[in-house]
Length: 228
Length: 232
Image (cartoon, rainbow over all chains, first blue to last red; front, side, top):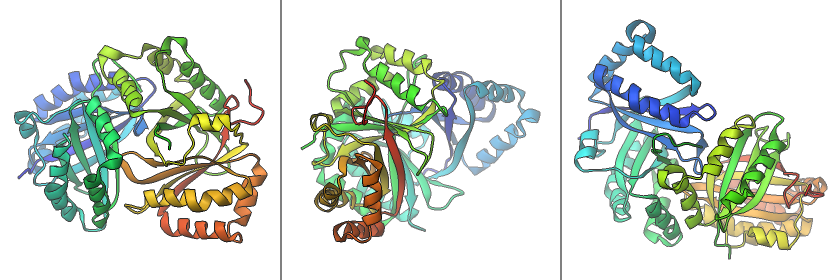
């Protein structure tokens, strides 16, 4: 039973600053949050421009529970009074981004936490990110079906669940994250998709619980590399 | 049978820089240093007309295969296979565009490939570009009906299908592009939408099925083969 709390940031990048913003988070921001507040970086990824908005990055943070979330937030804010170093990083990042949009997430019970991801080596070269909007009141039913029906289908196709979450504040909204081993594996899935009847049946069945689902790719670019 | 896939990009251009942006994209596509990228075609390039939907913007559509698309993404995300020419171009053209939103498209079987459009000499003054959100399971039926019901009506009215696609990883979305040789054919079609029986039946189905849609009227880029009186 995962009772962690997550914050997922979607950050629109200014000009060519994507790689530098990711590097700032990897090298300075995340170590600071971990050291001073115990907030753990699950991942920082570039949105793959051929599949969604660009230039954009995604940052996924984990906290132990609601008590930890409250402590970490209270420690940081107001930033100018409580954390001079974080304020400096925030201002330095203005060269790369002006703002963003965050989601406060609670995991589905079967969603792995970071320790489990690390212990079970749940990782991949790229991540399939799904924005989920459920029919009113059906998110829990969707998550149950996701666990019982979709996860086995996905695992049989080489995907591993990195997380399934519901927004803690906005009803009927959530995200799924799936790890894919490689770009070549993604290609084989896309080529097979038109003839994959099991997957087509699941896609159709999702309409029972979902109003919409949008998938796109995110990936961690190598240090110093770009790009769109 | 069209077995290609398409990268579709809506780009937020710097206002007033739409045509320079589109030309700069073409310069990258024709960069001789990237001559090893076989099988990719510039399917179509458009800019917004200020009549429907967001503006200013540009739309690029690239014809590719899953293998080619994967190779392009590997070039971006693995250090071992960097596309340096693209990186240089990308950073050099920041003054022309601010960002964008992309989709990967899977064509309906009857959707024309780039070579088909070129060989038929298709020219358009304006294109009607639609992204529609349909119920789960409806997109394939919707595209079938585009082929069987809408296309005959369009053909009769002098319009031409540029593309009909579903969107990879977004199971509710379809994207269609219909070209009008002249604005007049588009307005005659809109005018006939309720009184032409075939068109009225399609219009009723579309209205009852699409839960949301984003409509844009687009102009082919001046250098695009689709453009009437194109600039070579």
